[in-house]
Amino acid sequence: MEQLLTMQEAKDLLRVSYRTLHRLVSSGTIPSVKVGRVIRIPQAGLRKFILEDTTGGKVNDYQ
Image (cartoon, rainbow, N blue to C red; front, side, top):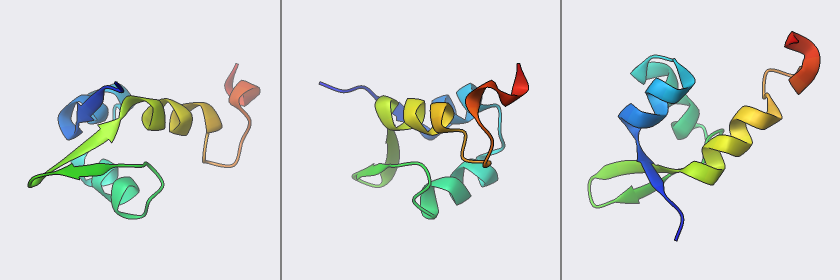
């Protein structure tokens, strides 16, 4: 079973503000599921977002 992260956990991993994370989730850039009244982010979806580098660059551009 895939692990679901809280918004706080995802925010801390990405080192972004809650507002930025919420915007990424709302736009569908980062996949999410709603469990009751709370949003959870699949760990695999967050990993994919990080590795794809959605800013338009390549992963190795910063090394």
